[in-house]
Length: 128
Image (cartoon, rainbow, N blue to C red; front, side, top):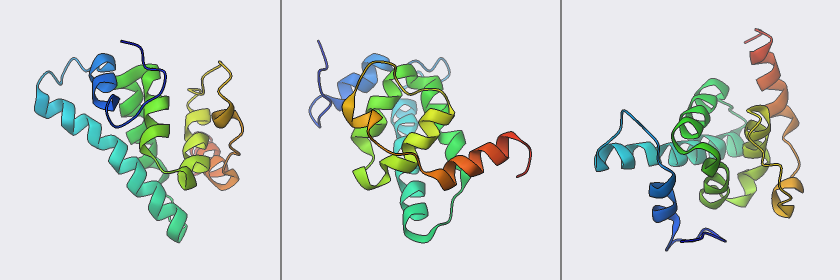
């Protein structure tokens, strides 16, 4: 089955097809792993509303998802996370070098969140 566009009907099947977690072999583990999308959405929403950026926690959730779902994580994130949070989310994706090379207009047109990038770079440079 091809997935030209993610939607509510095919998201779960796409997630199952791309699921690769050697430790999580049960259905319960799979659904727990899917919760990382919800956590990212929640923390980015709080950052958008209040300016509170939990950089290390967010980074942890992104890394877990990429370890489990691989390259499929990026389209899954853009499906699950609301558009108003895409700028900060894309910043994490770029920081982790996970932005796809293929031309996807909507992804490449989204501006980076400069504050997020600054904080991620500080973390890398040991200032956090």
